[in-house]
Image (cartoon, rainbow, N blue to C red; front, top):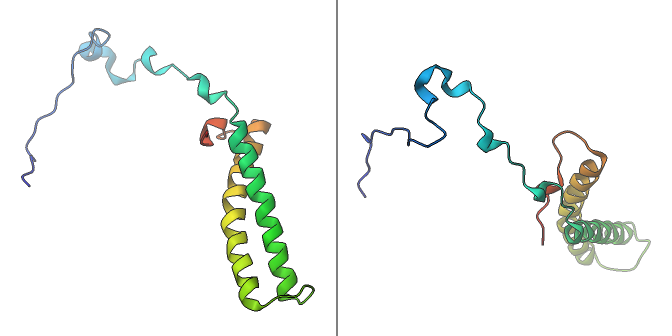
Length: 119
């Protein structure tokens, strides 16, 4: 496949970009980038409930695996390893999204509800 390495790029002229090269340069304020979508403020309730469910299910599966490992509950080691694996697979994403939702609710800098996918 041929590649074009010597392609010259240039700025496309906009109606708002008339004064781009007239002394103001790239440091001028551009109102096109001031828009913040309303989806940043929307709380994804289904995703948060799913994250809490995964967190609780992961805690339960990890607890059952620990009970089997310590012989407080009947079962074989293969069952305990299976529960341990499933527990980690459900606990990690549940904890991650629950943490993002909690910090977004608290208003911590850098965390928004938009970081959680909405289903």
